[in-house]
Image (cartoon, rainbow, N blue to C red; front, top):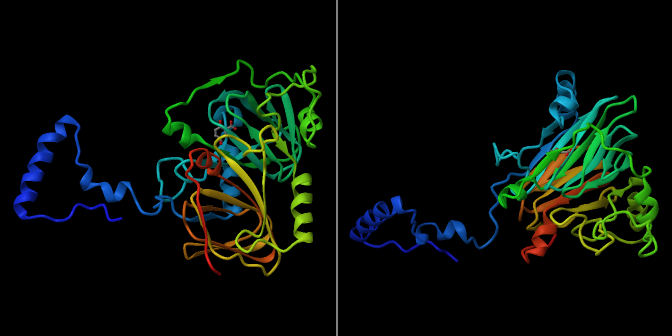
Amino acid sequence: MDGTASPGSNDQRRLLEALYADMRPHSLYPLWEVMAALVTPVPRSAAQPHRWHYGPARDYLLRAGDLISAEQAERRVLILENPGLLGSSAVVPSLYAGLQLILPGEIAPCHRHTQSALRFVLEGDGAYTAIDGERAVMRPFDLILTPNWQWHDHGNETGQPMIWLDGLDIPTVRFYEASFAERLDHPAQAEAIPADDSLRRYGRNLRPFRGSAADRRPAGQPMFHYPYAEWRESLLGLAAAEAPDPHLGHALEFVNPADGGSVMPTIAAQVRHLPAGFETAPRRATDGAVFVVVEGRGTALVDGQEFSLSERDLVVVPSWSELRLSATAPLTLFGFSDKAAQEKLGLWREARLPA
Ligand code: GTQ
């Protein structure tokens, strides 16, 4: 569809311009002048494909660590801002990504907000995120959720810096103008429930007997910790047992066991594995996605732009860009995207293209 109004005579143009000038003070605007830009035949993302090498980003983050405390910053995070969305703090129009640092002995103070968050651990071992009274001990490449309006603080009682990838729906909540946030009057919330309690109760496709006092987490969202040890075993087990999907490689999505849906209402999370030498056929999808390398080496070809990838490097793949992944060494990726929200809105689509 080409929604541009067809050109008319110079006379018509002059009269139309006069109409627009008269209407403008009354907050009225002609659709036909903007139709083609509003209702596009295929998605046109303002976001750009981009890759961040982990090493330099980590150096800047540690430099920030020398200059400002987690407590002072509230959250000491370097935002991964999409170069096509400058000033928006967004990695794709709907989502935010950042690298968060907690140094030994620090606490990122307790707060809650209507934005939903996930953490994917990149460095360090043994710090914690406390969520509504329960600590999740953070091991490398664990996925940890902070669903909306749950109290959370992060603390590091280990001797090493702890760095993780934050994924939040900040731009989505901003779009809906639905941001609420509050601080607890203590830096750390009370530990009301033993660490990793929810993993023991809900983590293996079981749950406490219905109606028992042991059923402590919200019925709609009992799980908030998806350990690497578990997802890796599933993903690599699958890779050992069958051929990879031509467009995805081996791919698994994290689910909310309460409803089988995505981990949070706005954010979906996935892991991928490509055997050495494997290259995916090109694919487009409407979700804007961020990937981080867990293990291995390879390349991401995004709309013809090639990005080399090695451990902990990050790459953003905007809506409807053509993605080809290839592995020079067995490549494992974690990714998150706005597929969760798009599916609920009936918007999500993909196109699997020939190799
Ligand atoms: O850890 O709660 O990267 O509130 C941005 C906002 C992290 C957090 C971010 C946040 C947090």
